[in-house]
Image 1 (cartoon, rainbow, N blue to C red):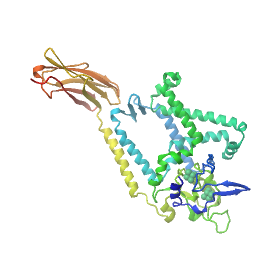
Image 2 (image 1 turned 30 degrees about the vertical axis):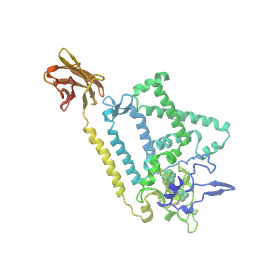
Image 3 (image 1 turned 60 degrees about the vertical axis):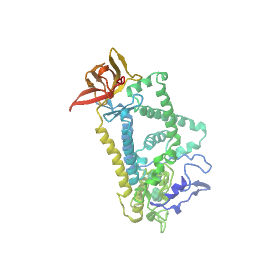
Image 4 (image 1 turned 120 degrees about the vertical axis):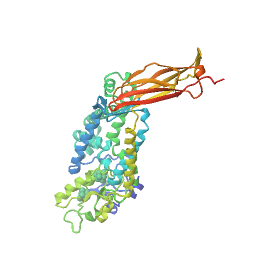
Length: 487
Ligand code: SF4
Ligand code: SF4
């Protein structure tokens, strides 16, 4: 942790040498963030709970709006239907997948490789251009933690100073507010967990599961209990540690940045040397410490760019407020690249970003192309399991199965007819097969060929037709026939 952070130590804005790990308030030493240790862990290994101060400002307003929209989408999406089908549903037990009006089944699973690869490289593009912007603005960890749980905490336990005081208060004093916070947080995490399950289970089934005995839906019940427990621990206790120590995207950032990546940084040329207002020779930083007080990961951005910075812009908003009050230009802490801080010049598109962009377009382009080229239905003629052939009354008898799958989002009727082999009698159990979206059916097919007409390489061929708005679709399904060797 500290090695990689140190390697990110002070390039893009920041003044590593100026940090003071310990200051004194009266006689009490107060620990301050430095670039060698995690502020959220005390020197004795215990947890140092971070209570970021409240923030107002232009970035905070944008985030508030964005979080509201994202949370609303997250809760509403499982309930939204397009043409009677779910907007987003990954029905794993039935292997039916609904994405924005398109329907997929297990045979389409290979498409997810291109989709996930494309999305992965999209995150690389974002990281190459703007660092951990995704983390600070749109990652579910941040959206729920900052947009929901910290607000609840503020409502119940008060501002950060009151929360810190409460942390140290005796249990008896803490209990009422802590109990209320735990109860509300549990309700919220249960709501998030249920909503998450709504992406994997049709909401009608989910509602039925919620209102019936756990014994009726043991898998759903177990999932909800575990997910609620994990989310509760994460959002009420583990918090920023997930972004700092566990998230692989966060760990990758050091490899995705370059000197033109736009990150949150401190303009040390303008800010140093720090000093109270009116101090002779002092820079613009008045060492008010507010940029540290609002940081949800407990870092001092003036120590330089650090991997644990999630790019949330809290420190920008609060420092802009300070600068405005002092009548100084805002932007002492701002979004800029290392090159921007050092030379005032910026480059947007670079080789590595272009490479990520090409890989992203390749992944998403291949996915889009493959989706548009998908067959609207599957018709596979296969030998019935465990059968070979029989000879009866001078005829060779093969038992086959036509496996039909409707991959269209609407119901379709399939018409089946035999086209070979010549001279054979083909008995099809159903010649008209109506199928609902993503429904599949195995239609038994019996083929009788006179023994004297049977030869090696003989095939049964069926034609399957389906009416589509754009015209009739036809597929031919074939399967080899088995029989006695010619004498
Ligand atoms: S908020 Fe701005 S002025 Fe205050 S300590 Fe941070 S950088 Fe300096
Ligand atoms: S340093 Fe600033 S941008 Fe980075 S996490 Fe802390 S408050 Fe957010």
